[in-house]
Image (cartoon, rainbow, N blue to C red):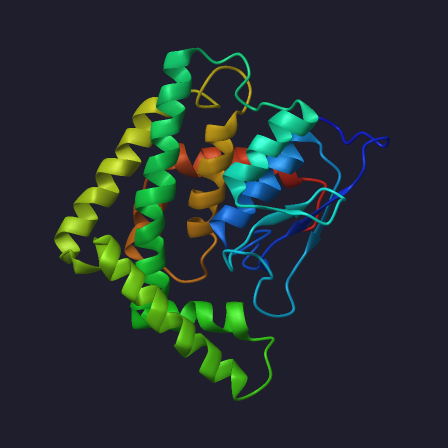
Length: 246
């Protein structure tokens, strides 16, 4: 991990709150936090006091000091490369970069929706995340806001497709995705070579977020049942945050 450079200006990462032992309950926010931490970019996290003031209404977003928000974890990665000359995938071959892209898409555009379905569309998951996400809100608002958000999120999961699938079909897809990750990682410490790259960051952000849940779910059980992935999450977390408060 690259040590912070004292001469480099500190950036502000607008991010959702942490909990359950991870820096953010949002895997995309945790991804951005982990990328900046791994690269040694001095950073101050800032949690919103209300709805995010971004064009998309989503987080993460980065303020590099000019007041212009860089929205989304991929855009933050582009900023790191273009403005700071930091490329976590530097040295990878074109084939490795292509595989890294496909693994990222698997986590961010498939397994992510399984996570969202379990946390928001299923009653057991919603009971778990409601106090973690909204427990700081005043009474009444603490009940109304989550229900309003839940309806929209559940609708999006159904529209994406995961919300329409049978339990058996979702289970099969979870297993296929996780087995593919295990096959690429194998017995190695990191996915590509002797140092962590963006793939390791994304895997940590998403799988670590799942494993941190205080209650079990099908996805959590599937990840926890693959020791290769559990070891990777623990290794990455120790590298990033051993000296930081989670």
